[in-house]
Amino acid sequence: MRIAALFSGGKDSVFALYKAVQKGHKVVCLITIKSKRTDSYMFHIPNIEFAKLQAEALEIPMVYMDSSGVKEKELEDLKKAMKIAKEKYNIQGLVSGALASKYQADRIKKLCDELVLISITPLWSMDEEQYLSELIKAKFNVIITGIAADGLNKSWLGRKIDNNCIEDLKKLSEKNKIHIAAEGGEYETFVLDCPIFKNKIKIKEFNIIMENECTGHYVIKAAEFVEK
Image (cartoon, rainbow, N blue to C red):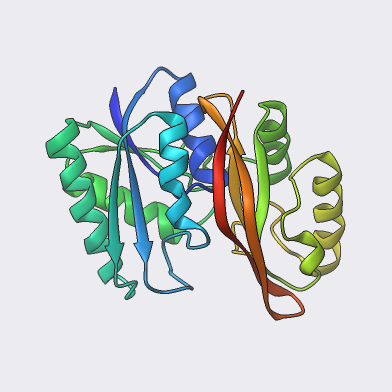
């Protein structure tokens, strides 16, 4: 099936795209929404501009659209982008990285129904630890680029998600009841490499901005391709 991928450059959207490719779907375009709100209800925000670099690494064209970020109105912006993708790339479905958020999954499914597209959610209801373990086994290189939960601090920013990271997240979850795969917005991520990237991404320059002890951002300032 010819599909588009709702794409933020974070682990969920890239892994969902990867899973869709494994199942034989042809991903013909990416749909990326840049919200003006830093706390968008629907869309990933940190380092979203660098999703364009990831699109180059994937060698997949992108439909990139700005959004006001106003609750529910941002869905109208997504629908416009989906219409463009359908008309320009003749897509039949949309893959998204919805994992446990019914709010996001229901709204994406509704838009797909309205545009006569199939909603594909390969990560839906996966066990969170199993999901992160699969991510690592598939050789995804993912770093944490945003934190917003008790127990997380500056030392987590820029940290690679690996088995040690999973164990530390599990300990935090036992203490603070966080979702270790961050479906509650506990942290944000950026994918530097995965099996379907043609080139790896190397970060050349970044800033760390802390709002308080447990809320902060790893802001990518410059990045480049490195041959695999």
